[in-house]
Amino acid sequence: MTNTYKVGDVVSGIVTGIQPYGAFVSLDETTQGLVHISEITYGYVKEVSEFLTVAQAVKVKVLEVDMDAGKISLSIRELQEKPLMPKKEDRPRKSLQARVDENDEEGFNTLKEKLADWIKQSIE
Image (cartoon, rainbow, N blue to C red; front, top):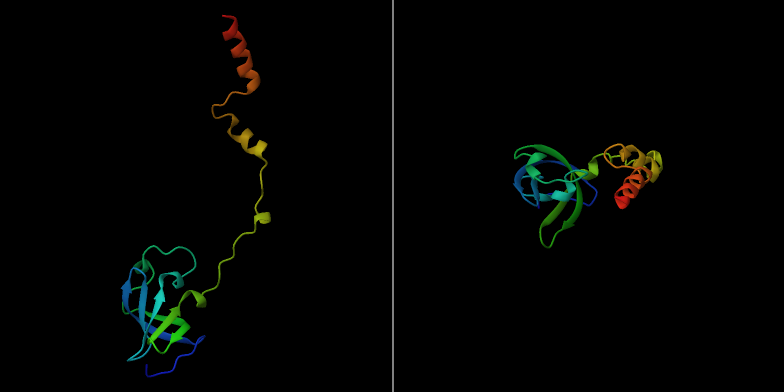
Protein backbone atom coordinates (compact mmCIF):
# COMPACT_ATOMS: atom_id res chain seq x y z
CA MET A 1 0.00 0.00 0.00
CA THR A 2 1.76 3.09 -1.22
CA ASN A 3 -0.91 5.58 -0.19
CA THR A 4 -2.31 5.69 3.29
CA TYR A 5 -6.06 5.22 3.28
CA LYS A 6 -8.16 6.05 6.32
CA VAL A 7 -11.63 4.92 7.29
CA GLY A 8 -14.14 7.36 5.83
CA ASP A 9 -12.00 8.42 2.85
CA VAL A 10 -13.87 8.70 -0.44
CA VAL A 11 -11.64 7.74 -3.36
CA SER A 12 -11.92 6.86 -7.04
CA GLY A 13 -10.92 3.46 -8.31
CA ILE A 14 -11.18 1.00 -11.18
CA VAL A 15 -12.94 -2.37 -10.93
CA THR A 16 -10.26 -5.01 -11.60
CA GLY A 17 -12.15 -8.20 -10.87
CA ILE A 18 -15.59 -9.57 -10.11
CA GLN A 19 -16.26 -12.54 -7.84
CA PRO A 20 -19.54 -14.02 -6.55
CA TYR A 21 -18.89 -12.34 -3.18
CA GLY A 22 -17.94 -8.86 -4.43
CA ALA A 23 -15.67 -6.77 -6.65
CA PHE A 24 -12.01 -5.87 -6.38
CA VAL A 25 -11.23 -2.20 -6.94
CA SER A 26 -7.77 -0.81 -7.69
CA LEU A 27 -7.21 2.39 -5.72
CA ASP A 28 -3.69 3.06 -7.06
CA GLU A 29 -0.86 1.16 -8.76
CA THR A 30 -0.21 -1.09 -5.76
CA THR A 31 -3.37 -0.95 -3.68
CA GLN A 32 -6.69 -2.62 -4.19
CA GLY A 33 -9.68 -3.22 -1.94
CA LEU A 34 -12.83 -5.28 -1.92
CA VAL A 35 -16.39 -4.06 -2.26
CA HIS A 36 -18.39 -6.87 -0.64
CA ILE A 37 -21.62 -7.81 -2.44
CA SER A 38 -23.63 -6.33 0.45
CA GLU A 39 -21.90 -2.95 -0.04
CA ILE A 40 -22.67 -2.53 -3.76
CA THR A 41 -26.13 -1.01 -3.45
CA TYR A 42 -29.21 -0.92 -1.27
CA GLY A 43 -31.46 -3.90 -1.73
CA TYR A 44 -30.69 -7.43 -2.85
CA VAL A 45 -27.80 -8.10 -5.22
CA LYS A 46 -27.88 -11.55 -6.79
CA GLU A 47 -25.11 -11.06 -9.34
CA VAL A 48 -22.33 -8.51 -8.88
CA SER A 49 -21.95 -8.34 -12.67
CA GLU A 50 -25.45 -6.85 -12.94
CA PHE A 51 -24.10 -3.70 -11.23
CA LEU A 52 -20.38 -3.55 -12.03
CA THR A 53 -18.06 -4.42 -14.90
CA VAL A 54 -14.29 -4.86 -15.08
CA ALA A 55 -12.50 -1.57 -15.98
CA GLN A 56 -15.46 0.50 -14.70
CA ALA A 57 -14.50 3.65 -12.79
CA VAL A 58 -16.21 3.88 -9.39
CA LYS A 59 -16.21 6.09 -6.32
CA VAL A 60 -15.88 4.16 -3.09
CA LYS A 61 -15.80 4.87 0.63
CA VAL A 62 -13.18 3.19 2.81
CA LEU A 63 -14.94 1.17 5.52
CA GLU A 64 -12.01 -0.64 7.11
CA VAL A 65 -8.24 -0.79 6.71
CA ASP A 66 -6.30 -3.82 7.97
CA MET A 67 -2.63 -2.88 7.52
CA ASP A 68 -1.38 -6.18 8.94
CA ALA A 69 -3.34 -8.28 6.46
CA GLY A 70 -3.08 -5.68 3.69
CA LYS A 71 -6.83 -5.56 3.20
CA ILE A 72 -9.14 -2.62 2.58
CA SER A 73 -12.92 -2.93 2.77
CA LEU A 74 -14.81 -0.57 0.48
CA SER A 75 -18.40 0.49 -0.09
CA ILE A 76 -20.26 1.97 -3.03
CA ARG A 77 -23.57 1.81 -1.16
CA GLU A 78 -22.36 4.26 1.52
CA LEU A 79 -22.13 6.96 -1.16
CA GLN A 80 -25.69 6.42 -2.39
CA GLU A 81 -28.76 8.07 -0.98
CA LYS A 82 -30.67 5.65 1.22
CA PRO A 83 -34.06 4.86 -0.33
CA LEU A 84 -37.05 5.98 1.67
CA MET A 85 -39.08 3.15 3.09
CA PRO A 86 -42.81 3.81 3.29
CA LYS A 87 -44.04 3.94 6.84
CA LYS A 88 -46.76 1.50 7.77
CA GLU A 89 -49.11 4.29 8.74
CA ASP A 90 -48.61 5.91 5.31
CA ARG A 91 -50.21 2.94 3.59
CA PRO A 92 -53.98 2.73 3.75
CA ARG A 93 -55.03 -0.34 5.69
CA LYS A 94 -58.11 -2.32 4.85
CA SER A 95 -59.97 -4.16 7.52
CA LEU A 96 -60.18 -7.92 7.34
CA GLN A 97 -63.86 -7.64 6.50
CA ALA A 98 -63.14 -5.26 3.61
CA ARG A 99 -60.61 -7.73 2.18
CA VAL A 100 -63.07 -10.62 2.57
CA ASP A 101 -65.81 -8.57 0.90
CA GLU A 102 -63.50 -7.91 -2.08
CA ASN A 103 -62.98 -11.62 -2.63
CA ASP A 104 -66.49 -12.66 -1.65
CA GLU A 105 -67.77 -12.53 -5.22
CA GLU A 106 -64.97 -14.78 -6.48
CA GLY A 107 -66.70 -18.06 -5.73
CA PHE A 108 -67.50 -18.15 -2.05
CA ASN A 109 -71.15 -18.35 -1.11
CA THR A 110 -72.25 -16.62 2.03
CA LEU A 111 -73.19 -18.75 4.99
CA LYS A 112 -76.80 -17.63 4.66
CA GLU A 113 -76.97 -18.96 1.08
CA LYS A 114 -75.22 -22.22 1.98
CA LEU A 115 -77.50 -22.79 4.98
CA ALA A 116 -80.54 -22.96 2.73
CA ASP A 117 -78.79 -25.54 0.53
CA TRP A 118 -77.77 -27.61 3.55
CA ILE A 119 -81.32 -27.65 4.91
CA LYS A 120 -82.66 -28.86 1.56
CA GLN A 121 -80.03 -31.60 1.41
CA SER A 122 -80.78 -32.79 4.94
CA ILE A 123 -84.51 -33.09 4.21
CA GLU A 124 -84.04 -35.11 1.06
